[in-house]
Image (cartoon, rainbow, N blue to C red):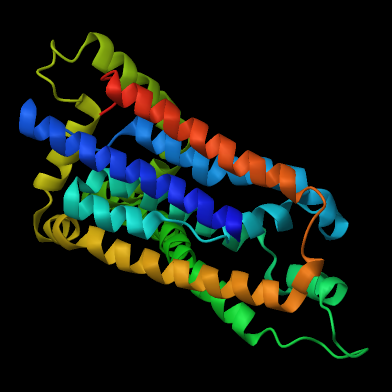
Length: 315
């Protein structure tokens, strides 16, 4: 738990530096500085929110039942994060772009916990082998544990359900369009398929966009008038999509922040109850290595991001 708090403080400390630096730049040189979404910043969030848990889970996996990487990684994805605090403070004092980076990776981590953590099967293995002070044959009360688990993963489950529903709806509309020979239905089906594919494109291309952002800022910013083309295409899409896009643009971010706070409450419930049930038994021999990895890699990712920011090579 101490490691979780230290990593959160590192991320919040980075946010404070970003806010101070951004507001100083706005007062002295550029009034619009730091208002954009940064792909480099997203890459840093992926390293901290996905890469660090993956490396740590590889370190501690021998301590889990059946050497389960899924159980170890799922547990790391369920550790509390600073995402809602970052998003709230960023939205109030800097820009929604910085907070969106944290919220995106936080949601993906919740989805990872939902998929990887085989809920009752994994917890049954952990609880029966590690719970202290229980009478023989008496199972632990895990009601509060599972309540936290469900609160932490339900939002990701809803998003996953909607994501799959889009594809099912697209297939139905496409078949309907073929029999009805309707171009309108075919276009709607194509649009839904495009949304479905967008998730996979984002997963495999965010690192490419991060590199592109650095190269663009270094060599092409002056030639394009200072507007990053990838971000401008998103702004144009939202500005031409009517009332739904307007609602999402104005209120969607803050609703997302509230949902993220709920996710963190669920994670804290899960973690505190897990530690209460397992006591000192839940202390893998390799935990010191995982702790050092969490802190050092997070600090290194933040340091690299700050260096690029000061050098003018990230938005």
